[in-house]
Image 1 (tube, helix red, strand yellow):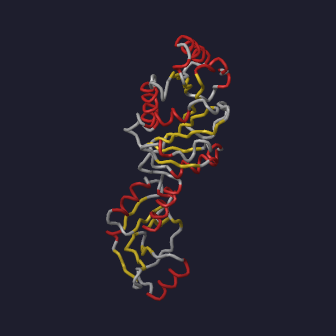
Image 2 (cartoon, one colour; image 1 turned 120 degrees about the vertical axis):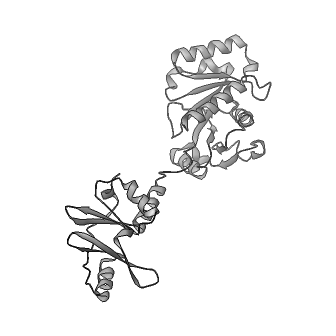
Image 3 (cartoon, one colour; image 1 turned 45 degrees about the horizontal axis):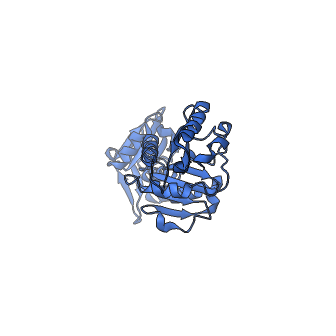
Length: 297
């Protein structure tokens, strides 16, 4: 970004012999608090209206002078250091002024857009699955293995909502509207300082081809129902978790997951028995953690 992108253009310029009353009139009429004093193409100083009332003259040593194409960061740094203002020269005349008020306006605009935030945006993982698929149990057991992350939970599932006692170590937002794009966006904003947000979708057959703004989409399906999962519906899905793997022959589970991976290269698959003997949970939790570390840089 260049100085001309953030400066106030066409400043009011005065000469050294201007009367105080005229200076005040110019400031009031122009709604400004800074008047560069220029003669013979040189900056002699700057009149500044103080909050206390009197006008104060600052010498040229307190004014940073630059050109429109200069780096805006350098001008901002000058204001943070000791400069009272910045005068921008173009073709031998002042083309703009940058003051601390302008700098504050730039910062406010950046903050409103989330620019420069110290904490990267959280990684949002949506866990989708039909009623009884085991996604609530998977969520609870996963939280216990993610102690190194700051994890928050969004409950879009009205059936599971309210049972927050099992969600140890996580902040919980109960919001059925998070099943929709705008609702999810609002819920994520409330938890924006988390590293990971796990969203438990409503109890319904998943619609994995339709994302709603999440970073990672996960489908949970009972291992016995893997054959019913159509790979053609997994375009936007990053992982499939076969739950209740202890209730289905191990070879049948593996064959079902291989079928999905062959049809969708790059799809991550896990077989878990959350809540029974927790088989497969460690590998699943390590993948979740790796996703967060990778996506947050």
